[in-house]
Image (tube, rainbow, N blue to C red; front, side):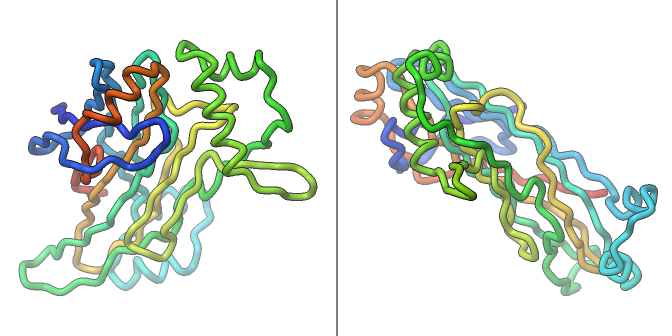
Length: 255
């Protein structure tokens, strides 16, 4: 596993500009604060499976996918894993995990169509937003970072809430890109679930065109909040600014 160094977004969540230090084939990024707290983002090698074989084993194959395979295409399930390791006094608050699907001709010079996402899972994970956040709840969701970060996450949760049948909800995860070649997931920290550790359970089902193999360009853009006032101010004022994603990695996705 190789590493790259990037820099943080400040606590008000405005994006940073500038270029992180990159190396070939990087699948891990360090996001340091100005005072040396190191947050880490890691991309595990995606698991790839013959999705049609899985469906046949379950006895439930959509006719659309059967027809696609009969014309020479394939149907693959791509299951990536993202790992977020915040430093003490920092929290990941928002992550955009994007995947560009790329078809490569098996024979040189051959023209092939674009791969398309048949399904993106989960399409949405929602949770109910509490009407109020007590001081105890704020302290609990702040963890080691303290109540300040807990209040920030509570504020973000409320700002992104929507109302349905008299209750308020927020989207913790939502997927996008069905019937398109660029897909992904938007992940947000909420009062009930932080963004830390392994993010699993993500899947995209891809219709690969005839005569092609599949590759994927994975991009991760992360926003982090910093608890300590001096470190937050120094990172915002003097830290290098980046314009590239935190991670940008290409994998072959052969079934």
